[in-house]
Length: 404
Ligand SMILES: [Fe+2]
Image (cartoon, rainbow, N blue to C red):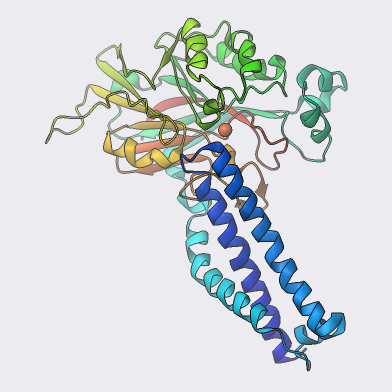
């Protein structure tokens, strides 16, 4: 093994990392914007094409110039040399890879998660397709999900029902132990049956939480509007049920149809109005954020200048995207509930998620994060439009407020 070979091989690895990193980073950020869906889809296609075509094109140029033996000889430091185009792109991608690598490593959710601020107190993993063949017919409706659910390890019809204890400093005594059910990204598309969603909503009803929050991506098409009533029927909570819309709800010609349906069932539309609930001596304020997809802008609650967070008020912010963390901090939310990133949808062993539609890449893919006074819970969500999930169980959570 020559020094030239090691050098060429190392360059190829770094260049490949830079190449993939650059296009994936761009893919994640494009999907975090509020651009029109058609524009995003066009850019996505261009990114996927560029990502696949560039290396293929360079390989074809090399094969054309040097033949297969020449290319292999070039890799092994033989007589043949790479063309200037391959060298230029490899150096560019390699340099970018070297620059991106530390940021990518620092942004791993593994390092960002606030481990001392929460504890999973129970987690029940369901895999109904393993139980009986009948369940395939019971839970799957659409052809693409039905086909893809047969892929080994695909978790689209799995579910984790978990309880987490979130810990806060200065938590008012009277809300210690308060339980909030958090649902996100249910994506009613017609692919999964109501029976699947009821695995989550029936469990919430059994848990009897004090409050229920749904953080967006409720519906993907008008044809699935009829699923809202049977999926959410019977849910109730003494301190109310609240929702915001997500980017997928924008696919409807009139997204307010979803709002009207949910409001008929007793949900409060936080994209339209703030809410205040009195719980013993504490005033719970609930504020919503649907940026960058909806500009409904309910007037955000602001503290008076110079006033710090008062002891008897507690603010919960609900945003579809965790990219609004800064908004939650600015509005002094003690708790923020988000979804959108689906936990990355695919999680590789050790590496974790690679793709997440966020300005922060996969940093806030799912979990509990803290900054200043704000604790943010990002749910992996219940479903999605892509018919695959690996190493990333769909989830529904009940969050219990506790003192740190
Ligand atoms: Fe979603």
